[in-house]
Image (cartoon, rainbow, N blue to C red; front, top):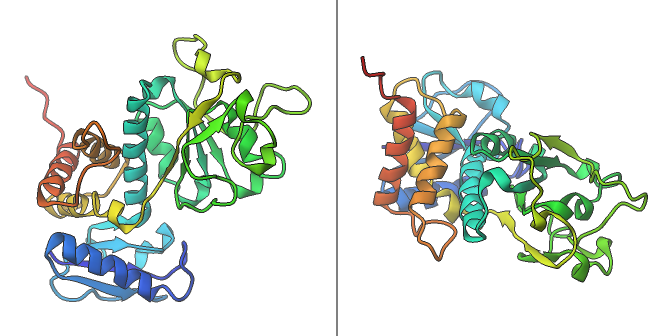
Length: 298
């Protein structure tokens, strides 16, 4: 399989995006033992090198993908980031004895990775708050996260606001909300922490003692560790799209890929050991199954 890593820096990275594209291309080539090209995406449609089977759209806004030749399988790095973050979240919640249905999650910087919200919903998480930097003045992140069970930081872009995980929140960690991600209540005593809330209250309608401020508890921050994390999902997802003509990485495909990562993760880890050909095959097979549903039995 031959791959091209293509981007223009419009999502993040800026105009000097070529070094980042080359780093990702080199890492992907090493992981797959296949040729990988690094190409800057220009303002007009362009032709891919001969033999390219799939494209990774990196550091680029999704609406710029039209410049890539039609019919070429495309995986955005933002989609791969969302898959890894969901897998990491699910293993973290499971290690804490929590189910997705009974977990509250804040996505800090949600607009930077739009696939995260829909993917969380598809995974069964109903208590989701989408927070962005523009919300900080009215709704400080410390307040928004005070009743969550995890915070997702898609692009690891909030170091000043998110201390290194795990973060302790609750009464025991409330010296100054502005100093970090600690439990805080609104000065007017209101219960609603604000933010853009997705979903509803837990379906069972029952309260969870862990949801209430009081005893200190640890709040994990789920972030990407770097390119190495992307290599856990990209080889398999690219292979799956290559194997199914006309396929695209819709939410159900991304969910299947994330669950494949979860299934491959040892109990003492939050992500699988990898990358490896075996892991790529697991992810690819799971994605292909979601793309080719089993026909109903007559």
